[in-house]
Image (cartoon, rainbow, N blue to C red):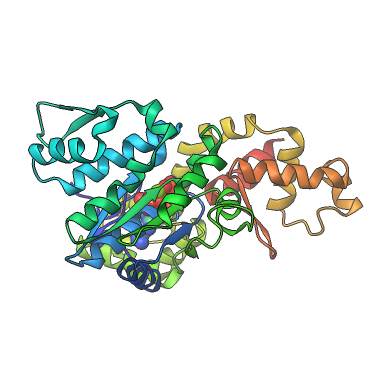
Length: 376
Ligand SMILES: Nc1ncnc2c1ncn2[C@@H]1O[C@H](COP(=O)(O)OP(=O)(O)OP(=O)(O)O)[C@@H](O)[C@H]1O
Ligand SMILES: [Mg+2]
């Protein structure tokens, strides 16, 4: 049976909702050759949005090269991915790949090996050490091919925060910037989570990517949009859902895109004809139970003061550095607070804005309050 909601993969087509303004803004950047930087916490919809904007762009002269740095841990892997995906996008046949590799990357003694099927899948082996020393030919490859084919290219790089794993990533950024800023036919769309790291790369005056492009901080999707989307998906499958149940889904999931879709799906599965708040609450309790093992692991990796800090945050304690708060939650000295915050930000557990400190995973937050802290 096909289910009407999607999570854990890219939302596209009828499963993609809202994001109208962001889509227009990104498509405009694509068509005008402006670089884009897209930042949000995990699972808020960056990859889905970029794929959607690329599909909406529909410009006959713009090609998209999409790289995912999810598994990339070294500079060599980055160059390999860039070369391979560029060749894939620009080559319709095996012969093209061989010819282009020979013409543009010949000095690295490339070897192209094809897997038996499907016939466009191939392996590229080259002297990656040599490339690391002089990566310019690879970095120029999209630009040179765009020039040759008289088109434009947008290179989209997903999970960009992973460059922080590369040895000497500052030097790597300098190499990228030096090459990319000369490109006339190629623009870049760089996106990832780890707000602090991304902000440091793109808005720190002393970093190579300072003012590199249009920075977008992706927000959550508003309740109203979710409500009409969920209602529609129910209706299409001949089921109904009432207004209170819709509100409960977005409240419990705190509008977090992944969790809204997942909770809507779990509620839909439990519904025969009409979904109400009892069904949603049961579906949510099931989800919390299912995730609780992961949450236990997560708290196992935290220090006692970090857990105490999360308790203070979840009880909405004000003035975290005040003496009474430090004592009540056993947080140590006020100098500790900054260190705890930083550690929890680095673990992507909390987000800190001038207005508030927030747990990034609303289900984890619910579990802490309603289960974990009650047992301590
Ligand atoms: N515009 C949207 N419409 C409907 N659902 C969405 C939308 N954007 C995101 N989602 C939901 O959120 C989930 C996560 O989306 P996506 O993978 O695009 O996020 P991400 O920010 O790239 O995550 P990560 O940081 O883990 O890479 C999707 O599987 C889907 O359930
Ligand atoms: Mg993603």
